[in-house]
Amino acid sequence: MNSALKFITGIINYFHDHLILLSKLMGLKLNDKQLHFLVIGAIGILLFILVHELFKRLVRYSLTAISFIYTFTVLVVFVFAIEIGQKVTGRGNMEFQDIVEGLWGFLVAFAIYRIVVILFYLLKKILIRLR
Image 1 (cartoon, helix red, strand yellow):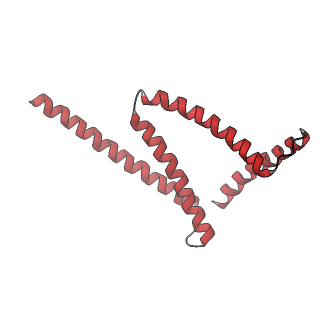
Image 2 (cartoon, rainbow, N blue to C red; image 1 turned 90 degrees about the vertical axis):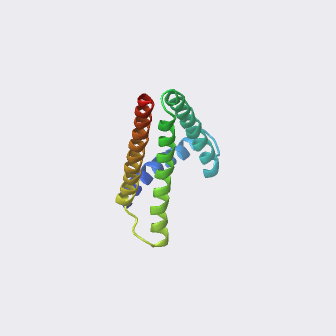
Image 3 (cartoon, one colour; image 1 turned 30 degrees about the vertical axis):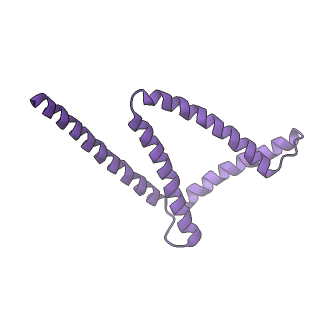
């Protein structure tokens, strides 16, 4: 887990340093907060546009798909927060496998949920035909 976080942090730091250098070369006197404002704002709006287009297409087929993607995304943030919290507080071990297992638990629970929903749907169709 530590090596994965260090790798991701290294990539972020690389872009961070180059953005600061680029802004200085362009004669902009932007501080770190202003760069965060601009970069996260730009990334956020691009991500929103992509997600919005994806969800508009998905909703034609299934609201469940959108609900699944949203839930999974929130859970990814949640499990990372738990593991980081464990590292910061020293209560438990910060391990990538904990994240994988937690998300796997959701995927299995979701599969069971979908099977139950499909079985109820099929049972309802059978009962309607029998009447």
